[in-house]
Amino acid sequence: MAEILGIGTTHYPGIYMLDKDAPLFLRRTLRDEKTPARVKDARNWPRAMQAEWGEDEGATATARHREQCVSALREIRRELDDFAPDFVLIWGDDQYENFNEDFVPPFCVYITDQMESRPFQVSSMVPPNNVWGEPQDTAFKHRGHGAGARYIANKLSDEGIDIAYAYRVRYRHGLAHAFINTLMYLDYDRRGFDYPVIPFHVNCYGGEMIRSRGGAAEQGMKVGEPDPPSPSPRACFDLGAAVARILRRSPWRVALVASSSWSHATLTRKNDYIYPDHDSDRARLNALKDGTFATWRDLDRASIEDAGQEEILNWVCLAGAMSETGQSPRIIDYVESWVLNSNKCFAVFPP
Image (cartoon, rainbow, N blue to C red; front, side, top):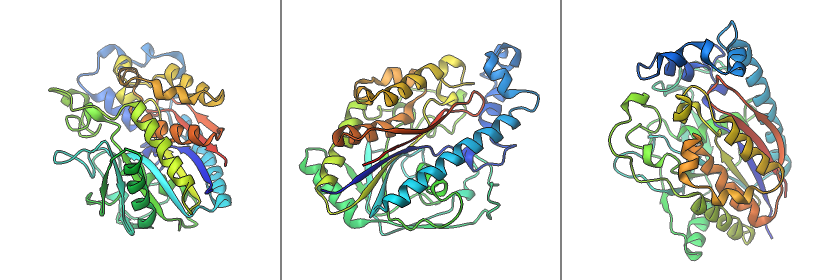
């Protein structure tokens, strides 16, 4: 029986931004004319947020946040190298990158042999400067695993789960940021990343996908009827469980990676889009700690969207897989922030 390693991580862009740029999501919200005047005044923020913003607009908090995240990412890379997988499957979301008005699938597996990405050329959402000092036109090349991806798509169909597949990446910059950021972070120290990769798209943004340009649009631009919804937590959980079942019958050692932050300030309407839903994220964390993360299958879209946790669907896929295999998580770190847009969890599920 093949072995599976589970990994939960983040693709938060702020990890590769310069410290001075990382709070840009909060700054954008504070500049937005739709943001109420009362929340633009830091004196009205929760005390923990005021303390994090401090006298330097979050610079000290940003440095501490980066140190925590990078330390956790290095530990995950050590776990990955010790496991030595035949390929790495990443569940990640697409934010108006490969998928837009002409096609938005709930799930899509990429059957590719090679992928080339230039993430620092994407300037619409984040600055091109990065902590590694790499040129804006830097290209990252990653191998795919066509045989594994075809096996997964075919066997999922046998399980009664039919998904979309793609033989090429359409986005002009290569892989969507959920995937390429994850790969850059898993090679934060630039030692190389030669494991074949299978990107597995999850449409986390559902009803906001097109009208908000995958979350890139200003809050005031979100007008009109919502788009069709994202796949339900139950569908994501069951898909993850099916992937684990079929991979356990395969000849490969596989690392299953869920990549996303949890609650996003920029998605949390009830907090005027300035800070995440910490209570909901802590509830998800407690479910991981006490081994009840299978309850994520019963989450509903309304509560997920209320908490700004749309991207946690990537983790729900992983939860389904780990519930199928019976693997328990080891929490490497939980990095909470009030001013850096989102909370991050780093975990491994050893075989």
